[in-house]
Amino acid sequence: MAEQNDDHLIRQLREQISDADRTIVEAINARLKLVARLKSYKESRGMSFVDPEREEWMLSYLTRANRGPLSAEGLQEIFGEILDLTKREVARDAAD
Image 1 (cartoon, helix red, strand yellow):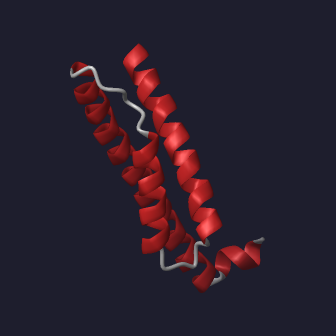
Image 2 (cartoon, rainbow, N blue to C red):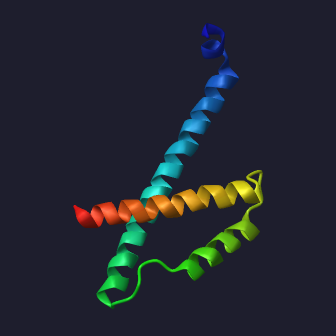
């Protein structure tokens, strides 16, 4: 383990990974805020919050836009989880 901690390239790559992870968390938090605003707006107008057609469009759009190395299957999996998480988090915030 000490060898890994002394390796400059390992330290540098780990720092870059940590930076990327923070960027992911920031992006998810920004997404949650936007979705909460959208949910509030739609509900104030009597509209349904969940739009399966929009979700399908978004997944298709992101799959086409993806240049890898994330596979299409991986993208579908991670965004399926993000959509589920978003719905839970926004519902939780509304209940608070």
